[in-house]
Length: 229
Length: 392
Image (cartoon, rainbow over the protein chains, first blue to last red):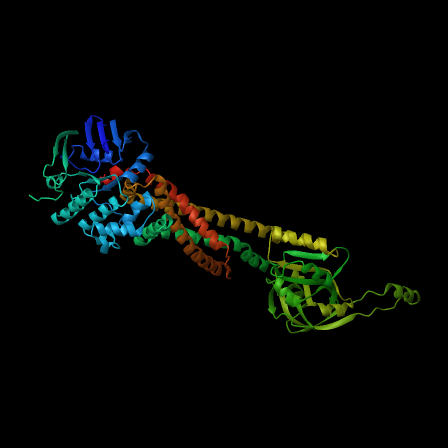
């Protein structure tokens, strides 16, 4: 059984079909990139997979559970327990330190553990920046805090929406390298991006156009390392 | 770390690290709590303050004999019932008709020091009599008899003849003359009140007793008690019950107007307090609405990473209540200072701190803030994480 399966998924806003009969399977431990131009339905798909929205039609099976049929409360629980989110705009709580931001995810999930949160920051190379506020961190550092926050609860899937969209090449490489390590450890990664270099680092890539999957490519030369053109 | 510890770490971080934002909310709450605490202090202190002011207009209780006359001892027994903190003063009076320049004048024997307490409105020209042989003359009497301050005047009193002895003596001598008792007094001052007091001469009780040859008896006692309404009625009833020789009654013109003024003043203070509470709630609700609007993105993020509606409510309510608590602590201190300022400037006296008002102010402040936060927090739970995180 696939970890995630979208079956004939539609998202319709009036006359607009943001997602139009989308079928997609993601296996456990897979690294998938979702590409597409603006308005192609990437964000809508991200919101549905991330349990922040429901499809108009179709099924979304996450670990065998059809999340399309779940209540808002259950979706919150599923999102908390199974999904780690990374955003383009970082989205850290600006009055909490780096370690407190990581502990925030623990707080909603189970029990906050500062030691474990510090270890997560150490994994992303920010042990020495743990007590800094987001305003005292660079964009790359903030995104690494987001990665640490996303992985702290050992989610089934890490869902990253344009994770390198606001980063320079050096930080982009650091973040992709973190994804590679997570993939090696068996974490399932779904990365929504418009950046071909980032998409090419994934094992598989699907391209969305007008709400439909227009192309699906398997990366034969998968290494997990970014190659700048 | 426990969840509770993390919870407090979050809400204190929110308040401490967003100081400039939260200062506005804290200021609103602290000002509300200050005025609330101050007004409640004044509300409870008004009867005491006004009571003291009313006592300048004279006694509010009169003791008379239940049957015939009563003694100083009876009066003291009645006064023993009044709490010493409430008793402003009590003055015994005994009235006798004396003669000055062969004209009958009403003389009142009294305790001059006690009169100063029960009738502080008496206006004296000259000096108060300080001891035996000195009198205070009502202005009408002084005018009619042309008595000047510093002059000496003789008071005559015709004692009643012993009826038993008189009857036997008169049987044999019808024209026997009863000799007057006479004492010379120095006029120390004249009394101006605008009332009937100006028709009397006031002499020390001991001198009147010597003049009349009758000791211990008093006709009336004026009592000034710094309480009003039910408290005063209770004292009156207890005196009437426990001291049979004395009949206590209230000076209606004083007590009725006192009760009316007090109840109106207290109603006014209460109304202002309620208005202030309502304004504080509106102010806090407005500030919290602004805080929630400003933090929509953060709320969206929290929901995206797994916060339930209950968690969001708990966190914002926690912040609000913490603000309420801090505002309440500040308000209870500042409120006392405010009440003290009002008391000193309006009533010319200080007030004492009512310790119970400190926790009450803090609790009311927390509750008011909590209620004011309800609507803004409810709107916080409606934030859609997907929309907010996309920057919409």
